[in-house]
Amino acid sequence: MGKLAGKVAVVTGATSGMAIASARLFVEEGAYVFITGRRQAKLDEAVALIGRNVTAVQGDGANLDDLDRLYKTVKREKGKIDILFASAGQGEFGKIGEITEEQFDKTFGLNTRGTLFTVQKALPLFSDGGSIILNGSVAHLKGIPAFSVYAGSKAALRAFARSWVTDLKDRNIRVNVLSPGAIDTPGLDPFGPEAKKYFASQVPRGTMGRPEEIATAALFLASDDSSFVNGVEFCVDGGTAQI
Image (cartoon, rainbow, N blue to C red; front, side, top):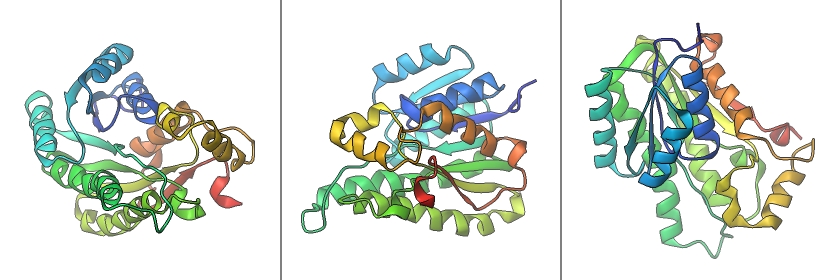
């Protein structure tokens, strides 16, 4: 029997990279998973890859109407949520002095505002004793050049988790932040080879992480293996934030 047998999970932004790897592993461990993404074609590919016990709901994590539609689907099909991996996010480079209002609004709108309402709108369906995982980043710990907007949007998630632990303590719902380091995913492709080389250079082993290495960490936080882990920032970064 898998570690998530009988559980219902929601994974947002799960059309590639870390999120789809996590959704796939959750299913392998016995969960039924709802995944989201903005592009229907990519969602269809994700469903085919996962293969079973998965429902895809097209939507933007920054759009509150789309979130309502997601949770209506979950309520109709399963009636509960045991695990939420709020993974949808995006980022782009911009030095202070060059940051645009559009860049700030887009990044904070999805990474910060979107995460908040992804969690808040899930709560009426959430099982007591469930697990909420926020997709953070070690960027807010490192001072990466020209990455302050992204880093700031992720730093807010650390503050959210601390407060939400106390808000949800009567329901024994755990809230943790999973903060990846540099992971080799399609999301890094737009930054170009020089950015990838820089990110890899920050990891002691000299190579970026793999999506599957994040998925196993997400499984730990989703399962009862982490039953006494609450309110932490779990850095899965190959040591990047520690040196």
